Length: 111
Image 1: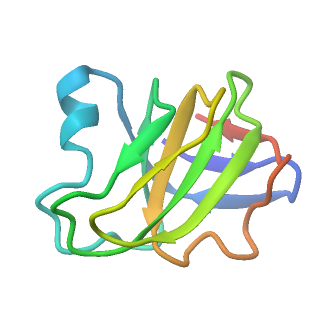
Image 2 (image 1 turned 90 degrees about the vertical axis):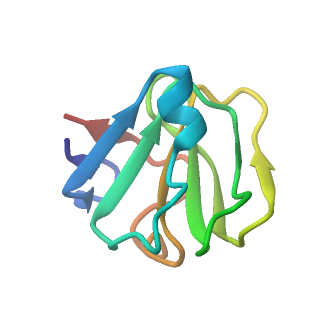
Image 3 (image 1 turned 120 degrees about the vertical axis):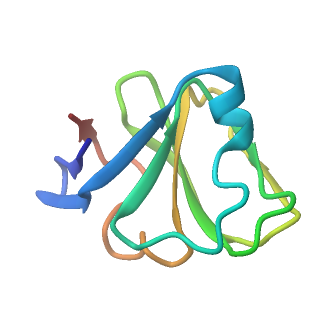
C-alpha cells in the first residue's frame, strides 16, 4: 500500500504493510535489524505501541479514524512505550524518516 499526505501533497511511504490481527500487531517490527525509509507498518487498530526487544528507533504517527495525524512520536528508542489517547491506528516508520514529511493535523490517504 501507499501512504500519501494529502495536506502536504507528497508521498510518505511507497511500501506500507497493514497489521490488523492481534498476532501481527503484537509482532510488529520485532526481529528486524532496521527499517528502510520508504517502508511503513500500519497497526490497525492501535492507540499505543512498545519498542521492547527492538534494535532500532522508530517514528510513530498516531491517527484518528479519518487518518488525520493526532500525534507524532519521533525517534522512539528501543525499550520504550508510546501512546496517544483517542488514536485509532498508528504508523511505524524508520526513526527520523518523518521529519518534514508530516505534521499534526495533516490528512493522510492509504491505498
